[in-house]
Length: 375
Image 1: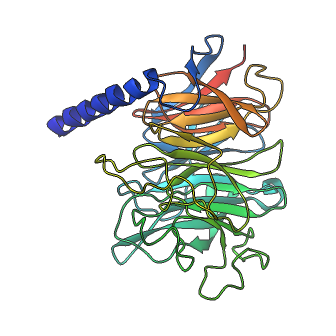
Image 2: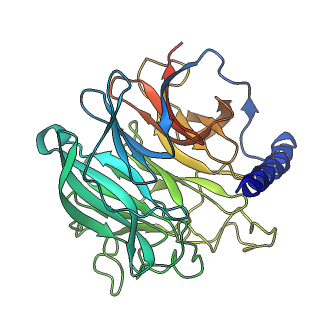
C-alpha cells in the first residue's frame, strides 16, 4: 500500500511538471496571474474524507455528501451531524454517493435529491433519488432517474444536479468510458444532459421526446464527463463544464437538442499521446464557450453574485482536481477574459454560494470544507 501511494504521488508530480510547462509556454487559454491575496479562508471542518456534493438548508446549515455514502449536516457551530436513510450507493472507481440538491421549494415540500452510483447485477449506473428530509432523517425514497444500460465500467458518472427557474431538474451523465458508443447514441442515457420534472416525469417538449428509439429525457448530447453545472443567475442559462481527455476540458452553455461533439470533435488527445480525432470543429456540433489545454480536471462551479466579494462578483469559480486550486474565470458576458489561481495545494471538488452570499468549497485528501471570507 505504501509503495502504491509513493508511486501515485510520483505520477502526479510528473503530470504536474509536464502540464506546468505548457502553462508557462503559453499554450493554454487565458492568463494565470497572481493569487487574490486579499481573500482569506475559514476552516469549517477537516473531519471528512471525500466530500462530493454540497447544498444549504434555509437556516444556513450545510448538507454534504461523502463519496463513501455518508451524509452530514454541518450546523452553525461547525458540528457534523450524521443524516440517516440516504440512497444505497456503491463506492467504486469514480462512483459513489455524489451530488445533492434541495428542491427550490424545499421549505414547503422538504424534498432533497441525491445522485449516486447504483449497482445491479455487478454493473453500475448514475441514478437520482428524491427523499423527504425531516429531523436529520431521509424518508420516502423515490427513484426518479436511472441511466441505461448499466455498465461494468467504474468511471465517468458525471452526476451534477441543478434546477432552473421553471423548476426543471437537469442531470449530467458521463460517457461511462465508452466514448465510441454512448455520447452520440440517443438510445442511451450516457454522455448526455437530461431534463426531467421534480417527480421524475419527462417534459413533452424535450427535444427528442417524439423521436423513435431516443431517450425522452435527453436535453443535449455529445458530452464526455460533466462534473460541473450551474444556473447562470444573470442569464438563466444552464452552464456546464466537463472533463476532456488529455487536454480539451470545456465550458458549455447547454441548449435544447444540441450536440456538443464528443468524441467526434475535441481539443484533447488520448492519455497515451495518440490522436483521438483531427477534427476540432464540425457542422452541427457546438464549439465550447471555453476550453483548457492542458486539462485542469474541473469539478464544481458557481457564478458569484452580490456585494460580499467585490473582486469576484459576476465571475465564475471552478475547482481544479488536477492542479489542486480554486480556479477563477473573469467573465465579460459569456467570454472568459482572464484566469486566476486561488488557494493552491487544495484538490477542490466542489464550490457553492450560500443565500447570504458566502462562498464555500470542499477539498479532498484530506476532506475539508472552507468558507471564503470577504476582503
